[in-house]
Amino acid sequence: MEQAASDDTETEALRRRVRELEQRQSAADAALKTMTAERDNLRRVYEMLRLELDLLRRRIYAAKAERLDTAQLDLEFAEKRAQLLAMLPPVASEEESAPPANTGGKKKKGLPGRRDLSLANLPEVRCELPDATMVAQGLEPIGFEESRQLGYQRGGPVCIVIARAKYKVSEADGSIHTAPLPRSIVPRALCAPSMMAKILVDKFCDGMPFFRQVEQLSRIGVAIDRGMMSRIAEEVGLTLGCIVLAARDEAMGSSFCLATDATGVAIQPTRLEDGKRQACRKGHFFVTLADRDHVFFSFEPKHTSDAVCALFKGYTGYIQADAHAVYDALFRGRDAGEDDPPDKPTEVGCFAHARRKFYDAAVTTHDPRAREALFRIRLLFEKEAEWAKLAPEQRGVQRRAVLAPWLADFFRWAEEVYAVVGAARGPLAAAFGYVVRQQVPLSRFLDDGRLRIDNNASERALRQVAVGRKAWLFFGSDDHAEAAANLMGLLASCKLHRVEPMAYLEAVIRLVPVWPRDRYLELAPKYWAETRTRLDADQLAAAVGPIAVPPPKQ
Image (cartoon, rainbow, N blue to C red; front, top):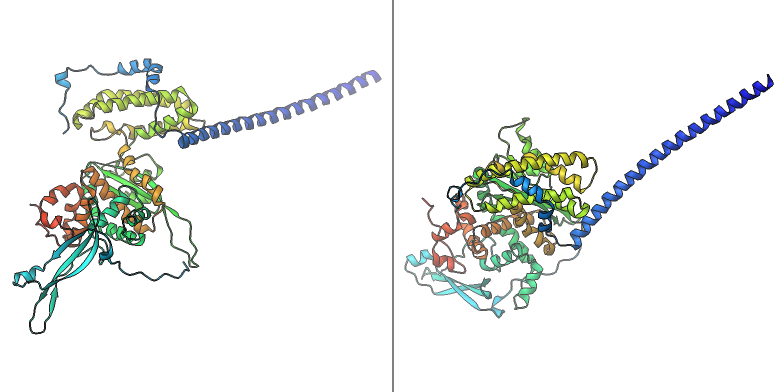
């Protein structure tokens, strides 16, 4: 009996020991599982950060162009090219298929006063301004009242002598009448319209900041300060906004497609009450391309959905953008108050943005699926280049016949890949997720031959801001940014219609003060060539003086 009791006690102790070891094993397994999960998560985070670091290094030190070895892609995906080419419809004969070509606290210093340009070593251009009323009465001028402005002609600055005729209107009291000065956007300005145009084109077209222009002019003996240049830019830019508004009203009512993009700029805030400076805040320039008619720049203090909806309010055509979240409310028709309003704009996607994401994934992860996506997208762009000179109707037919099956196959393949890689964060998942979510907008260019496959035109227009802000650093205020937006839009439209920007700005600076308000659209770059033919050539060629407003076009 004692032996049996001893055996039972030993057995129970062993059982307790086994249970204790099992509990320890379970705890150890749970701890191992937790540590393994933490390790795997750290590995994923490390890999994601490594890819981001590689991408940032490439953007800083490597070439900005998205270049890959296309010959290597052709060798790697030769079989895929054959499969895609097999989807093409039968090719018609050359005669049948050839379509027609588409034709603070510091005390301010005393102001130095107006500069005496007669002391500057500059060539002079004399402009005599008679008074038409006095001439009609048969009176001859008895002299001239002279003043000077700083102008610009090809070759450099000139001193413009403005000689206003003086008339003796009464023999009895000897009263003298002097011909009035022409109306001006910037009254009593030292600079003539030609020099204003030179200053504005140098900054907003060629990216030369004001301080560099001051240094350039000072080397040839012309003293002009940045404050004067800033005043000219702000007053001229805000005044010429009347032309921009007239052109925008036309574009919003008749444009087929608006292409838009945005970029940030720094805005210098006002000083605090104690005179201390504040840090610059961020504003945004939106660019809008209205078909081949107009280019607009709009300044918005915030890059928000409210700003976008206000910018395109009332427009119901196509809008091509980069799928940024701020455009979601616009394409949902939020302001209409309906779940699916019938008059909301239609979104058009951009394959250049999709390609850029795959390029980032290819150069960082070296995943063959990213390279295959680049190969497939490149075939789309190759076909678009072949059809570039076709009429829009013919281009649309070719797109639907050739590219529609390619796109369907591309999106099906992208969905399969995204189902595998979508759970992991990183460039590869971001690239495939973008095209999976944007299938409908990216396919929209199939609807009409006038739509573009990419939004590169907007990005090229924004280079005017991106290149210039490296030298400008910031804008002095929201008003100055709005004025700059008007000027950059007019200059970009001049480039679009092959209008010489300096001559155009000089002319409209003289014309706007006397031009009828209901005819500002005639001064837009799109219509300038026709408007210029109706102006008096001699009056337009003069450095200063009145320009007769022609009757409206019948």
